[in-house]
Length: 264
Image (cartoon, rainbow, N blue to C red; front, side, top):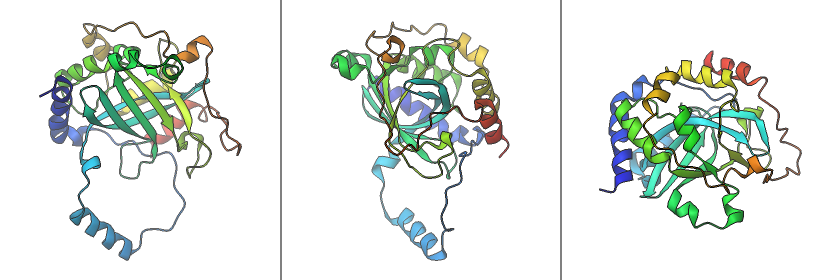
């Protein structure tokens, strides 16, 4: 079995046993619309029983981390990734604003190995972010699996790059997916992420940040490709929203938003 699939298959097996231990994180917005009717519920149950869902069933890893809008590093949010493995070097993730069944799909993240990333054109690399710091700092976690399994997974992810687009901006209190997609980035050094946001996540998921950081000290973090994380060098790529629906404002103080989520 390929090495990466081994790393992710283990967390999958473990997640089936430990999933109940992962605390819930609810979506920060309520979507307008009528409650499901009995007819809709019946159709839903029938579809769940009769229809195969290979792409969904292929999702076998849950990662929790943080994103910020490219060009707006102060506008940050927690991101719940549900990922499937396409092959040894490519992973695709649906990004949600929570980990309950009512969570909204905020966007997608594509993750590729450093060898594939090295072959991308320079202009393409500018839209990708490195994962080394997210791993070494303990900001990126795989909740609910044993430390040994998470360590193996993170050791592999440290050598990858991600390209992330958010399409539903629930962090901006958007109850519907209005506006345009926005390119997201990941943190690359201490002092960038709102400490209150990170601490609130850690408390909710019962993550010991200092312990995790120490446990990952033996992971070799490669130097990031200088063409990635382009925002650090003033090369900011972003889509201008012609509707004016996107404000790029920090969540009502990020810490207040986080506290609001945890109290739901």
